[in-house]
Image 1 (spheres, rainbow, N blue to C red):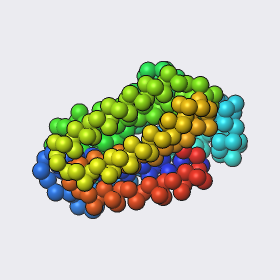
Image 2: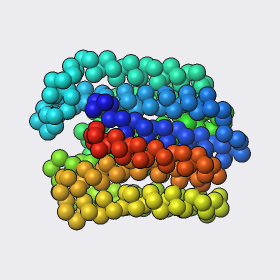
Image 3: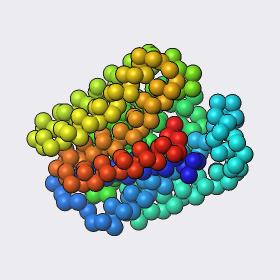
Image 4: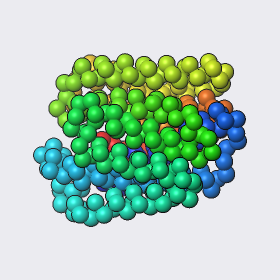
Length: 285
């Protein structure tokens, strides 16, 4: 449980459900059946699990210095066993995607590639790291959009989670040593872009029921980031990163509400208390 970071894995459900809802809105379709929603949710969770496990596999040496309490450097889990778990999660996630359609399978493969690219190489680069990590979440949104035939015609919406996660990843650069004010200010600007896009779609769709979700999202990301900017302390930066990751649920609930499926948006929001509870026991960052 410590290795897979369960609170993070649950946020992946909200990504694909947001993708499904956006496709339904843009194509004028009804929500697909429960079996398809379950398949895409499980596929997304497993792909995310694989990525998060391989994060620890590739960071094993670094964690011996910075986070010796993590499962691999502490010796509680062998590196080879963790790699096997991550590979199993990737394979099963891709298999479930094949049960949806060919497009979903191709996207699942792309998610695996981006996860491995980030963990092995990109995370070490100032610009490439946040972008590649953001692409993992953007592809996850597309995985949900692929459930409906023609949903990928609106692939450009994946840029929103790419920008958002790039912002969160950018903030996380200071979670060990602190003092990354410039990076956080860049993230403030990028957060503003994401919120602006949400407001634009609220106006365009006239679904004002989405506003409470958007306000909740702004408060959840804004308040911890404000505290981190004031202190520049690693502990506050970790809280800002943690809130940024968990706030994905509110971001995706906002998309779902904008799409007109406010009951589904409420269901997604119900994941948040569970994620917060799990985050108190198992590390998010």
